[in-house]
Image 1 (spheres, rainbow, N blue to C red):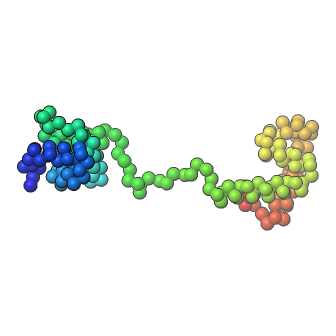
Image 2: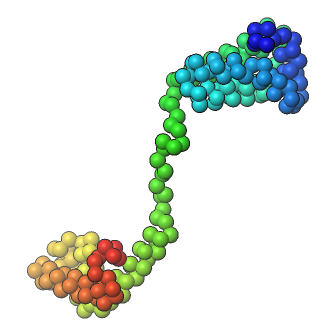
Image 3: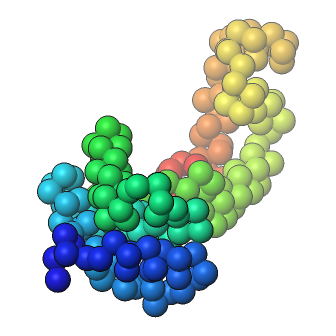
Length: 193
């Protein structure tokens, strides 16, 4: 049976039954018009996946429209359904096409994963432990320059030493920190930080 030979009275009976929640009537309506709606959508979208979505959306609209369906308004259901399919296809062409899920990159998690957090916490603990072995002035110079981000001039001023003296403290402090970390089995800063 072609969609052109479908009895408009049968369409109207089916729409009344669908309005009452009759799923079998809905399946029958889809059987009557589904293949043509899908074919029309495929021709207009040039995509089988888009055509399936358009046809599904058109029939979903038919399900929702069923309680308000008024056959006396003059339009046949078939005409209404095809107009819905055409409009959905036109809307789809106007907007950006969807990417297939396989073509979309997995988004990065905004928070670090558990292993990363654990590594950061452990690294911080190891560095603090190693820093505690340094003489106070070396530890202070490293803390002001690297952890607090002060310029050499500002760190030197804060400590009450010259820039040259601060730089000497930083050299000895970094050397001492490397040695303290090496005693803990860490030979590269990248192992911790």
